[in-house]
Image (cartoon, rainbow, N blue to C red; front, side, top):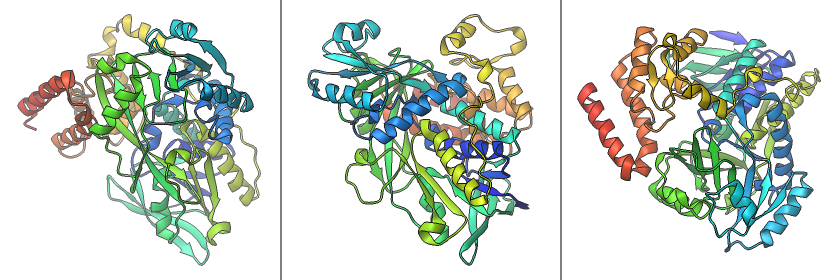
Length: 508
């Protein structure tokens, strides 16, 4: 297989697919390769926070301004991916109010709307807060569905001519003199090999940036920071709750759909594949977040997971939280003498669109086609069919029509036809591809009672290649990585039940 394109993007996270959308809307021939499924890296392993910029107002004013600007844009172009919860930065007795005063001023400087609340006002809004809080500051935080956001960018990019190739790896870079001419690729499922020729290659691989650059003998300064998060089986607060102090472990609670996500840690790791959460990290997060919301001590946890933050740095730093959450755009022609290669890294999920815009601006300028960006103005597909979380719950409570077929997922009430329609409309190549595009397996049982039903549907549709028991076992192994660190109490009992089912019915 040999293809040609004007721009090749490597990496299918939010930034990569945002780039594919931006460039295709500007009329630039674009292709994208991703070694797994879209959002399989940090874009699918975060706390789903729609940043107001408040978390960085004191420590990183530039990143804070970027966040509040993109917060407003995302609410406009992707309302179906966003829940406007608001957020509270709460002060505990041990925190005092000195930082609160600095925080308020920093928010004003960054043009982040911030309102000081008394203790009673804060408890009226969020009764589950610790009764000893001194007060809180209200900011326009929210929650975002990263999977839907990424998939919607994919849909729009493809609709405007971009070619996206998931489950495809880069095996080598094609370099002629001081110019990158393209790459060789391999399909991870079929084994088919090929070549993509492109005068411009954009490295949007996030934490894997240096792995791609190493193929050209290059490297950039980057700290890999693991952030562990916990998922509760129900929603603990209506709003995002932050600790009003300098950023630290266990200082945020994000309500996301029917659950709450507790975070996060910051642990330096050597490889982007090192994202296993530990029991010690779980203990730390429960202990710290329960200082803000005491109910967390008795809440049922359904999963632990971790993502790797790619933090760009020019010099060594001992504390990853002191490294800017801003992004870096690197032209390797100017920096290293290898023309045709650009790296975009760092940043946040909420700034993905801005990162894509700035990168597209640079590429179009170098191509001599300075076409303006429109992604801040054009809504994503599905924006007109916005469905708020409360509306989704009402729909679930109304029940389902007989035509919808059997329920595959009891926790999220996902019906057979929903998955069937998804299979008709998209070329999905892996079990995880389906889980990234629906809420199936995201509920309390974490897929224990529904994935084998899904596998039956895939068999009927002849969409399973190879040994289906192996596919099932691989899913259970991945599920176990997130269950093992929280294995106590009810979770322990449920896991024993799950084990007996899969041993007894499937001999696994």
